[in-house]
Length: 444
Ligand code: HEM
Image (cartoon, rainbow, N blue to C red; front, top):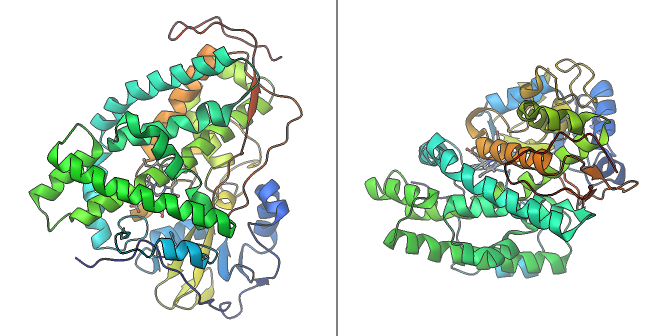
């Protein structure tokens, strides 16, 4: 059982593949991309759908066909680079994480077959239909309680702080099996993790995040040891059961590393999905009243949010051998920036792709959860959370509206997208917790 580092610091910068168009300006950190990636991507897709971005040292793919092909050819395009910090980590942060007992390993998103296949078999079993059924009442109860608190505190409210951030955090913590009493520490340790790997965190921020990562890893080590002594009905206990049944097929450090990675994989990204969804649903006239009247539209509306305004706009791969793609010769070692956001707006697959349309019949053809052997393990949990959040909000706050004239700010980063704050308002509705009020149509 070979073990691989959780992430690597890369310094090499492969050159542009021969004959490939070179773009000197493209950067997901640029102001215009952060403000509106889809306009930038539409122009790139039209003019130069595949190019080498000099600023990133990456080959950028913008068409669905090319992105899907790279995901599919996992023997040629590996995922070893997906957790590597996109910008250098400062010495202070690297030193904090160099202590001997900080030793998580690559287990899923950046692990290659055959180990990935072996570990994924056990983790996939943990995301069973039964586990979703166990989670559902918890998500519903917490969602209702958070909406009720938000409503009681009065409009306007920042949705991100009131519900968008806490709900996915608590959901993933209960899924893993962490005790509720530790939620405050857990939320503190796991926040801002995306900024460390994919963002432009300052040295001071990197050091603060590295300290939290270390504290959280140590917590995970202690927690898994405790669960080994006292199993519960949770994902971690299931993994430990698989480890006990065959320690060669699922190692103990692999179990701890899966637990460690999961709260990052399943937290901030779901917060962003919820916020992006509300921005889309509350921006277009008539959409919110429509789903209030007909909640059966919610699942497809969530798929359309994932297509049109995905919380994850890119992912990475690296060429493992010399190969060809879209008519270009790609040398081994080429780093690739797969633009999921662009592929989701590809005109050859989606009519009028810039329009948010909850009735779109092929909304599910998006690629926001990836495709192939690394396809998102948490997709059902994310869909469940988003569906329950929208069911609860449409029922409890049918007059929900965006606070007028607000502009949204986004943390500049390589991969993820969601507003820092989202201000909402509503009329003075009473909470029903289950008994639906007459469908609302009003905005303030
Ligand atoms: C809207 C929410 C989410 C989106 C858009 C999303 C997106 C993705 C993407 C693009 C990948 C990489 C796929 C690839 O490399 O082919 C991925 C992998 C993964 N996701 Fe998610 N994710 C979401 C929520 C979650 C949640 C809630 C969890 C956990 C509870 C989760 C756990 C994982 C794991 C463990 C992997 C690695 C799977 C593997 O390599 O086998 N994700 N996700």
